[in-house]
Length: 273
Image (cartoon, rainbow, N blue to C red; front, side):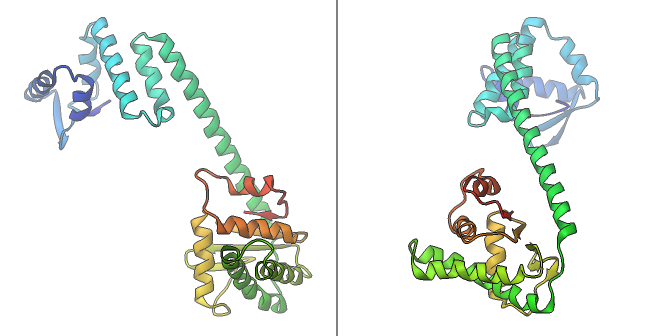
């Protein structure tokens, strides 16, 4: 690259570190490179690297790229897919076609995964935009229930941790959430709970002093830890779906887990996160 670090050069040419240091010092004296920071250098002119590289023989270049590829593999041994493109380039220039094709395949797979994630994210944004249009402000009577719903969600999460399945306290807390949602759904088809900063919102209206800051902060903390920005409940949501959601709130999240997909796999169709 236009910038390079001394440590990387040492790793590439580990057989003769003294040669690397002498080369650096000579290049500095000739003003071909300059020091940008501690053990970091840059070429004096943009085309200087290309000019110098053209002076290197073909076999020397192949050897250089082979060393470079090996160094990258050693540095990123536990995450080779993240540098598959660089490894393809290095092995290609080292004329190791077999290894180059190996990393070309990994690079294509990584790109396909990235594109799929981008598409899924775009679809999620579109769905959220469509939901925004459908959210209706709650009436005064329904708004009285809303803060109690937040409180019930927190209590159900705690009860899920404290009591075994089928315990009466655990079952009642889920039923309590369902009953409050049912009351609110007599007026609206959707109920959205979202947070921004330290504030909770229900159907785009901020919850203030109606709810103790303890419950507000606790629910925000649960959502934030699970990387959930908002939850939308649909009118037909059932008790079993709510129980599954609270279970997700209560257990540790698996690395890389897609919570929405986990809910769908377990038959939850009337809750969107």
